[in-house]
Image (cartoon, rainbow, N blue to C red; front, side, top):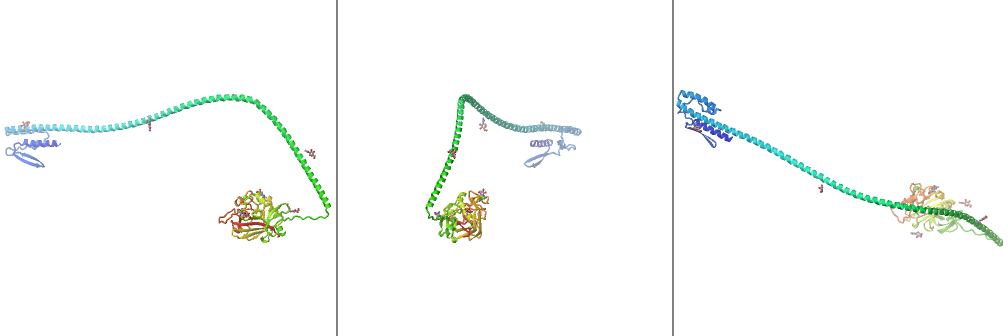
Length: 504
Ligand SMILES: *[C@@H]1O[C@H](CO)[C@@H](O)[C@H](O)[C@H]1NC(C)=O
Ligand SMILES: *[C@@H]1O[C@H](CO)[C@@H](O)[C@H](O)[C@H]1NC(C)=O
Ligand SMILES: *[C@@H]1O[C@H](CO)[C@@H](O)[C@H](O)[C@H]1NC(C)=O
Ligand SMILES: *[C@@H]1O[C@H](CO)[C@@H](O)[C@H](O)[C@H]1NC(C)=O
Ligand SMILES: *[C@@H]1O[C@H](CO)[C@@H](O)[C@H](O)[C@H]1NC(C)=O
Ligand SMILES: CC(=O)N[C@H]1CO[C@H](CO)[C@@H](O)[C@@H]1O
Ligand SMILES: [Ca+2]
């Protein structure tokens, strides 16, 4: 464009210079760094034409068309006024016109050329950009497809890997199966061999059975015979036993007869002696006491061990007699003082009695029953704690039933210093030991509290509990207990149960 503008300016300048070549007056215009010089037309040498206008010629778009019109009008006027001068002038003008036209054509050509080349350039550039875009898209597509291909190949390799692995496994399995088959074949062979052997053995067994069957039958018949013999013999033996029994009976009857005979002989002898001895002395009956009260009454004043004979029996019993306490005459049923004897015993021990009268002991339920049921007795219980405090409980009337009623307790008329309330369970309580549970508790008091006693559930007393040697603040439910004197923990140093006739 710059080039085009420069050309245009140059052309304009050229036109002006040609049109007014004869003029001397100049006009200079300074514009920035450029200076433009215009040569103005001379007025004095020519007569100005009314119609002639340079500007018009310059401004006209189509000089060749304008020129003929102008030249015609000029020519008509020149021919009218001064034909020679005008002729030359016209010619110069015509040539200038022609030159102009040529310039214009050149310019046009140039412009057209420029325009064409520009168009081509534009076309080329657009084609370039499009091609570039296409190329870019193409490369994108190519890279994408390459990636896809890579992925595909990856997948393919993986699949191939899996397939090969599976094939390997399959191969291994088939190998394993082969091995197993071989093994099974071997086993089958072995089994068939064994079954062969087995059948052989069976045959031999059958043969043996057949052989021994006869022998067995023979043996069985022998056994039968032997059994018969044994039966016969046992019958004979039982017969003999019966005979033996009758003979022993015969011998005992003989012995009895013999005894009767000796008796009669002795009677006869004594009668003879009595007849012989005229002076007859009356025999002294041996002294027997039914309890310690009788011992006391016989004049003995010392406490100690004595023998009594229970009323209406021939049973002699060693007992300890207390001749000091409240007038004495006490038959001791129970005594404890140092824990030397174990009181956690069973029914039969309590029935028969244990320990020694001089030490710790239990007289025995059978003896106590026989003694206390032969007449009316009072019970005295003497207690001493570890601090030396003594106290007693007293019952006017006391007795126990026999074993058939589990030695049930009967007490009446309580008094004493060891508590204002009786610690003994009330009348009717049965005796219990660790092996005979007759208490009214769902538990077993004799096992919980230990010893044998008239427990109820389990009751406020147990003088046959465990003898704990030392005082302790620990409450022991299985120790010696006389609740209404010392609470659950007596820690007794000494206990004594003793009886004496109520009418003493
Ligand atoms: C299969 O792939 C595993 C890993 O995924 C590789 O350890 C193994 O060597 C491959 N096996 C084959 C046969 O290419
Ligand atoms: C036992 O005595 C009775 C007669 O008293 C008699 O018949 C019997 O044979 C005697 N038995 C024996 C085995 O002596
Ligand atoms: C003792 O025996 C006499 C007769 O021998 C009898 O009358 C009395 O009832 C008996 N007493 C006891 C307690 O068995
Ligand atoms: C308990 O007392 C008795 C009688 O005095 C005695 O023989 C025994 O040795 C005593 N035992 C203990 C452990 O003190
Ligand atoms: C005595 O005790 C036993 C079990 O120890 C019991 O079977 C019996 O019935 C009791 N006797 C009485 C009279 O309650
Ligand atoms: C009037 C004028 O300048 N005419 C010229 C036109 O061009 C030719 C050749 O290019 C010249 O010889 C003329 O003088
Ligand atoms: Ca019970």
